[in-house]
Image (cartoon, rainbow, N blue to C red; front, side):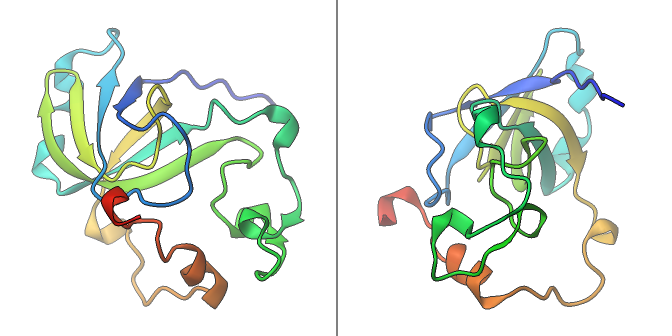
Length: 158
C-alpha cells in the first residue's frame, strides 16, 4: 500500500552538497510551508532539541540499497544491512536527526547541527523528550564509532 507524505517545509542551509563529515556547528533553518500558521511551531522553543525527519530528495532512486553493503564503501568495515546503518541511499530515503533548537521566528525554526542540505524537504518535526530517549546504555559496534569520528566535527577543523 503506497503512503503519500507531503513535506511540511524545507531546509535553508549554507551547505549545498551532502558531504559525509564535518557537520558540527552547522546552523540551519527549517521554513514551514505557507499552509501552516506560525503558531504551528509555538512552544517548540521551550524544548532544547527537536527531531527533524527529512527526505533525501537528491538521492538517485537507481542508487537505493536494499541489502547489505560496506558503510561508505569502506571494505575495512563489515557489510551490514541498510537498516543497520544510517546511509542516505535507503529504501524510503528518510533521514532523522536530533538538533538543538536555537530559536523560532514566525514559520522559521533555527536549529544547530542538522545534517541536511539546502532545499531538503522536511516531513515532520518532533520535540525531543527525555522519556523517548533510550532508557539504558546505547550499544553500537566499533566500526560505527569510527565512521562517526569526524561526523560532528566543525567544518573549520576539517
